[in-house]
Image (tube, rainbow, N blue to C red; front, top):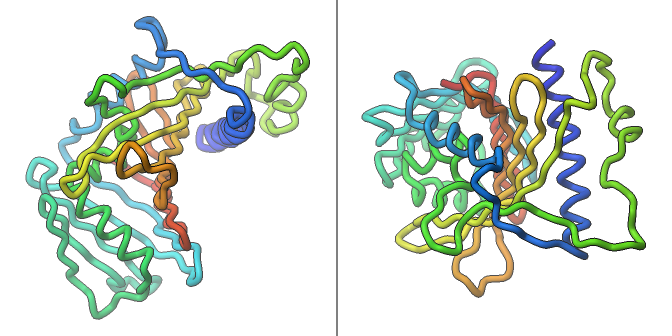
Amino acid sequence: MKKNFFKIIVIISFFILFNSCISMKIKKELVRVDSKDKILDIINQIQNKCFSSKNPQFFADFIIDGKEKFSLQMEGVWKNNYNTFKSTAIGPLGEDYLSFELNGYDINYLTEQNTVYSHQSFEKISSFLSGLGSKGLRNIFCGRLPFQFVSEEDGIFYVKDKEDKNDKKEILNKKEAESLLSNKTVNLPNIINKSYFSRSTINLLDREVYVNSYISVTKNNNGYGIIANSRFYYGPFVKDSDLELKWVGFVNSDVVVPTSVMFRTTYDIFIIDIHEYF
């Protein structure tokens, strides 16, 4: 029941974020959030929980959608105080399709001969993972990537629509929301939606990389559904990004639960649909 409820919340959040992005191409205003904004509590919770697990690991479906399409089971575990990450993709008969280990920033493939996918996009993802390192990969899984504020330009901003007297239509009105909600137990007035923009800075392969993220927050009685769509820019004058990341998760005062991580390259989409996360 709770899982279905959360899926409904995520659908609504995605719908709002999609329409917001279309609207923001035409008119938008970014206002740095003040100290009372609830998003800061959510960020603190994500920061505090990211590296607190005594047994950090996950189990997921690993899906590739591109020129080649297939799905595998995937498990991963962090060791050595998060400095080592080992992952295995498992086939339908229990065989190892692909295993690799990330020691710091060094990636080692343990079952290269069984690799079923060979493509430029996969090589790009591999290079990206090794550049992040084992701890950087944990930052992605726990939802911390959009909130690594290093420079003065970094931060979290509230996305505010500029006033337009000729446009009074809401992005998602109550009737549209009700049509998306098949579960009648959801209390619609308790759902509050906000969109944010964050700018963070990470170090990738000894290069300063800027991460711009549009973040949708959906509140309900149990916590917050979060969707973060991030793009990576390799320099202040780069106008386009060839790698995108989408993180979907749930946050409340007790837990941070990621449900999916998606990498999108020029040709392919790599989806990690998470079933268990510690």
